Image 1 (tube, rainbow, N blue to C red):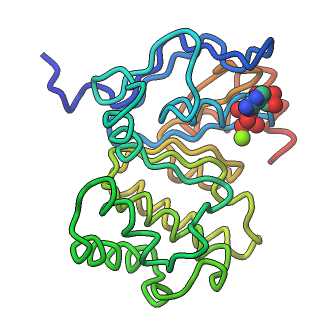
Image 2: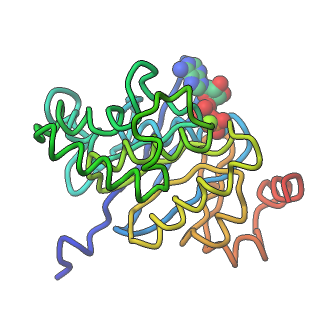
Length: 248
Ligand code: ADP
Ligand code: MG
């Protein structure tokens, strides 16, 4: 019998989502193992963000089922708050609280949502800022940091909730090119430490080196999925071939 640890952490079954008459997720089936790193790629408007947002219930779905860590996604209340801390999310825009220092940004959630003591939360926050390489920026406000530093702070803030999975929605797309590498480096090390990750990105280098599986989406469907070496060497669908020819 499979133990709990061998069961997938995230399961989507027959997931469908409409925005009005626009069918944005079409019969999506996806099973993500513990410790697995999935890179989601595909043209703009194909439903990648909606897929991520559905996993931590920033969007509801209209049909199908999403199971996280053995439980259907909760609709509301404490269970939903718990899900949001279990599934960390990092967006293209860093979404830090402008009027809080960096260390306050990282320690606030654990105190408010997880009931950690301010001292313990601060200590953990400092350790996480050190891990993402910006401990020396702890007392500053977001606007005083570079984009790359702000995004690393946003990653530390999500990690402070001790998540079981991390979702990244184009985390480097808003960055100046010279700052992309420092953020990808943090994500690569997180992947190496066994974090379960779903990463929407156009950074094919990251996909090649850090992903266990590449998922190609188009028009709300998972068109094709394969390990990166196989996907990049031999994309099967015309849509994937066409997409790769445009970005590589
Ligand atoms: P991607 O991240 O792949 O670019 P999205 O998931 O953001 O795609 O969007 C998929 C489709 O759904 C797009 O056509 C987009 O315009 C539409 N869409 C996204 N969010 C909303 C919304 N809140 N209301 C209406 N349409 C939306
Ligand atoms: Mg998007």
